[in-house]
Image (cartoon, rainbow, N blue to C red; front, top):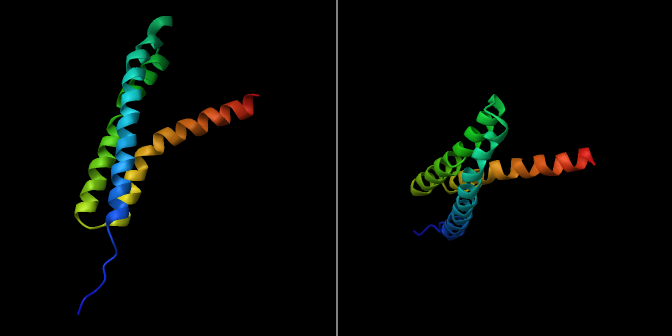
Length: 107
């Protein structure tokens, strides 16, 4: 008796594409991390420290979710792997919502 198992190819493709995009976000982050220290141009304040720390902690998010998604894929938990790899984009989506929302409510 043969059982037809669903193909794991779509989730593998999504894992690769999403993580290439996450890697691209880290390239952009590198530029932003370098520029973030300009927050101290007007003086050393708690807000400046908060901003710099938040920017410098960003890479932890996609790296942790990338590792978790590959572990889930390895354990053949494809749905979980797909959800976890999608979470790598959550900070970017939140930032876009804040920017769009700020422009919508300020104008």
